[in-house]
Image 1 (cartoon, rainbow, N blue to C red):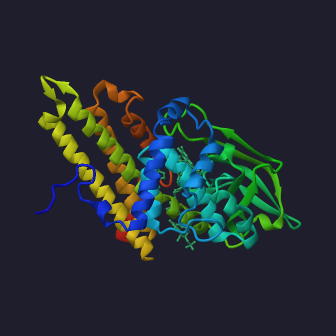
Image 2 (image 1 turned 60 degrees about the vertical axis):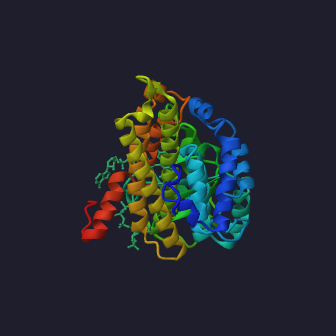
Image 3 (image 1 turned 45 degrees about the vertical axis):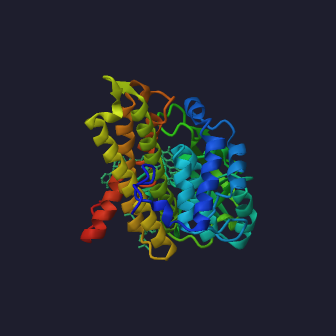
Length: 391
Ligand code: TGC
Ligand code: FAD
């Protein structure tokens, strides 16, 4: 006789993982329980990560920075294992998954894919170990969903490059050792490896955020930043180069959102079975059960979507529109679950004593960065109709 479903893994998706994937899940989950979950409410309340260098080192020791990349001190796991790590980290907080996404999927991936051997050997092993922090500067104050309109410019001066412009909303910008900066050149958009101690480079932290508070977000100002000829990522060519890095980070979000949804559902289930009103646990009310049933459905559908996209990626069959569909659907599912879980918690749900509202407000950022909900809807619309509605 089949066993009754486990409320925490209703479709038994984790039973389909390989031994290595299961080991990685257990290691990241144990790390999260030990090193992250006890502190996250305080970090969120403080509106920062108090020790980003210590955190980077701890993530490096865990082996999750650039873990799906090959060589240069990177673990070289498959995509599903990387997704599982993102899921377990975002079950704690989206800001922590962001830290790992920006380092591994954006900054390191850009150098790994488009960099010279010298750039790779200078940065990748140190970044994998968490000894150097990277950031990824694509968005600008007036250029978000439409990165092709960027104003940051790199011009040649003799054999040097000189960069001028402003990047905005850059995760880890003010603690980074190296910034991968995308700039318009006479040859189209190209990427530049910018050590953050280069004269003319400054980073200013964004304050008063109401979302992703356990994460450092910055403005990057580049004023006559002079770089040697070999600072350009030699294999970057056009807007497609930064956009292909986004596919990697968006893949992590497909999994991470499933983790945030799972955490909110688990908190709601726990609360509903212990909180009593009208002489019994609120879990006994039909309206609460409907909320929990909707949550189980969203959590498991998000998990299935992530796993399918991960398997496609490992088979080399994952198109960027698969990832758009996953980001679009899983973030919306996580938002529904977080909001409903918050309501199950009543007044307690608005505090940092419970994770639900923290996840709920974090997911506003997750729905915005790496392509807004509308941008992914339009990508899917274009994929199915063949007609672009972007402009
Ligand atoms: P479009 O003309 O469609 O494309 C220009 C060239 O790029 C190619 N391309 C892609 N290549 C790889 N992956 C993708 N996802 C790609 N999307 C497009 C395309 O084939 C074309 O190549 P070619 O050779 O023909 O020139 O460009 P468009 O200007 O119309 O824009 C398309 C659009 C809107 C989909 C794109 O610009 C977009 O994705 N906008 C959203 C911007 C965005 O997501 N920004 C994220 C910034 S980084 C961030 O948020 C980090 S958050 C921290 C964290 O992850 O935790
Ligand atoms: P806009 O592009 O101005 O969009 C505003 C609204 O208009 C949105 O609802 C959007 O969907 C809608 N819209 C725009 N165009 C269309 C259209 N054609 N059709 C219909 N609706 C449309 N960027 C980086 O480069 N690196 C980072 O590390 C990074 N980290 C971030 C961290 C945080 C906390 C946040 C909040 C953002 C971060 N970003 C980062 C920036 C992020 O990628 C952008 O905010 C995002 O791409 C949206 O751009 P925008 O905010 O300028 O919004």
